[in-house]
Length: 361
Ligand SMILES: [Zn+2]
Ligand SMILES: [Zn+2]
Image 1 (cartoon, rainbow, N blue to C red):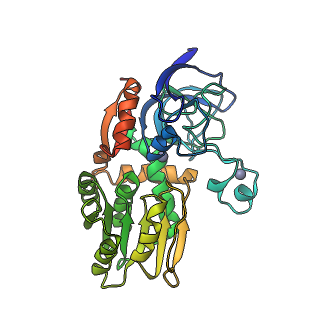
Image 2: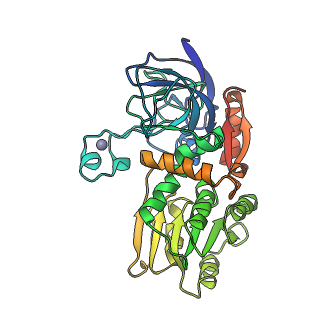
Image 3: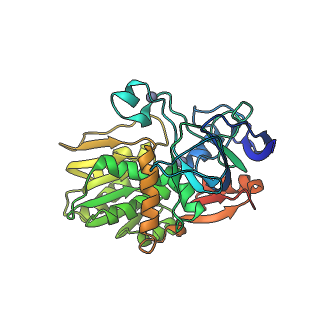
């Protein structure tokens, strides 16, 4: 196979084009994967619109892939040491450089300056296939491979390759929840909704979700939220802060998790009790944030991406809690590769929670 089809962003907000992109030769330890599902993420929408600075067109959009191994160059094992063979269904981690201060001393590889991720890499230079909205993807040798459990759909596994593993990373940094604690989540996108299930599962007394639109909040309630607040109907931040305080005897939440973009931080800090923990996951948005004061003795955790173990943890959670939470409700609609523009529009307008691209359609 010399070429395959891929969805290529050629300029900010330009219609995404379907290109024939070269399939590169594999170096030792690399894989070629036939994509079965690629979920779209808010970040893909931002990159397509040109809001982020981390890309140069033309690039293949998409960074949440799940697929079947088509070809393995040499011997390869997964994160747990099991062999990786042609036909296996897998997801795979991003790559950190392994020899900088963050990789070797601080042991925080997610903030490695040399980190490699997908969905923004040049489509006109080898190894070409580093975006997931394509028929095939190239998996560099340094990626950690995680096999997808049989009971997890390819679409959910794809969402685990970014949104869900970032949530696992957030809870990892937060540490244990106690059974008397209230977790308030800002945002009802895939990250906020999945976080509701994890917070419930980790033993929170009460899980509150503040977001919109209502169809997402309904899913959040089925995924473990005890109560939700619709910001489309309650647009006054003071009333939203009151709503959290009313449910926590006036104190504010023990944990506030931001999954709505950086602009939500000042309001979220007001929802937090003195001594509480704030977990900042939603990365979108720039600009000056102003807060009057910080809660006393608060802790702040910020999260970027995930370490290879978080891919595994997200898949484990999906597989083992299959009967407890309706994960497939986050997967809204499936599109063929040629329908990428429609899928991107549906994501941008919050019509869907997760759009899935199935390049085999
Ligand atoms: Zn993402
Ligand atoms: Zn590094």
